[in-house]
Length: 376
Image (cartoon, rainbow, N blue to C red; front, top):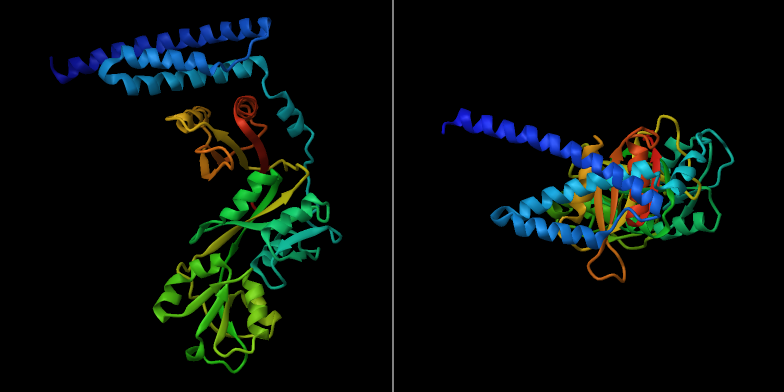
């Protein structure tokens, strides 16, 4: 048998597979109708495992790949049943009742900002809310607590950097508090090495800054052999350097922080990546979805089982949704289970997106819709 004949046989098999797939999905429709009439749940994990075990056994040397194929079929079948049965009604009502505007230009907003005056978070805050003055909190935890305690309506915190990666503490706090992300902004990071006036570059022995900034400038610090230590924030490090009596102390900070605390800029633009940027998110207890929102964030947990994440992600692919970020964090007190944080492009009210979110909200443990927003 030559190659052309083999391909014709494959084409014939594929035609049969498509016909069988459509018949199977029609059966799923009838299953959904039966479950609705009899008050049965859609997801029966024990039955699915039995079916997958049987498929793997029957497929012989192709058992594992056949198991994955059928797991994907079951995911798609379940997604159809969720849509037909109108799953996730609570999430739907939450989304439809969300506000559609954010008072960016208001001058009397209560804003919680990480750090002290002069921090990059302040720059992000003023980019988003140009007419309101933020209240500063020295830690990410305190920003979240301020929102929890109604001391602020919005909080501004960094969540990832183009060089140093994710701000894991913020991800952990997002998964803990489950606040909504209502907006986001990217800030260009142009670090300065600043010290008290009269200090020369060659005099610098100790450098302080936030952990992320130190990571972003690691090449410079290593090349100079400079001793460095983490500090609460870049601006707090600048404030400390200004008040320190020690010689040869400098801070890696923004130019605004250097000016705020009367420091002299000795060097600038020395970060590892000249295009260094940090993404900040605006968080709130109240959901707001603007009409032009184009990014969605959510989190959920999955059992520590082979293929469980793949099976969920295939449903995003089936609906044509583009994932832009995935972050996993250990789920406290649950052994080897993980919480997953996902960002993907889209609007929650799109025809494909809303049914998927509603289905996942009913099916996944610890599911939280964290927001649909745009980057300013």
